[in-house]
Image (cartoon, one colour):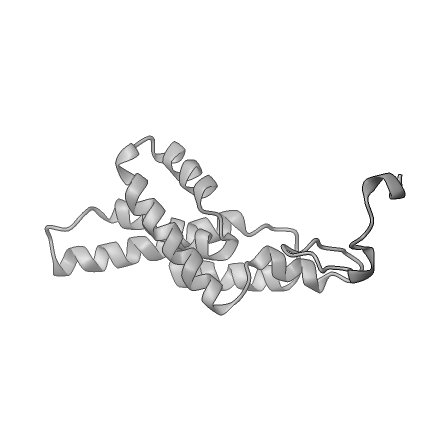
Length: 140
């Protein structure tokens, strides 16, 4: 289920059809987590259920794509209704964010820079030395 779905999600996203990325990322991460969980249960039968791996996989893929940490933790905790997953979800999302930052920016920032004519406010503003002596009274 994982390989055909992630392949179709990549193709659909690449042809610029308005399909979104949130649900495909969530579903492909859950499918991959379930695959890893099922393989781990065959090797070590005393591990957690594959449902737990599915939740963590969904969080990892979606967190690596969108780089949302706290909001995604809250969304996934509300979906499960079980607070025991707070620590694994937070660790997974922070790891996905840090590993993703090593390679590139998040997907939404990359696409903003691809759009011609769309201005994006950077995190650090460039200083203009000739305007350092201005105060608000002089501008207004």
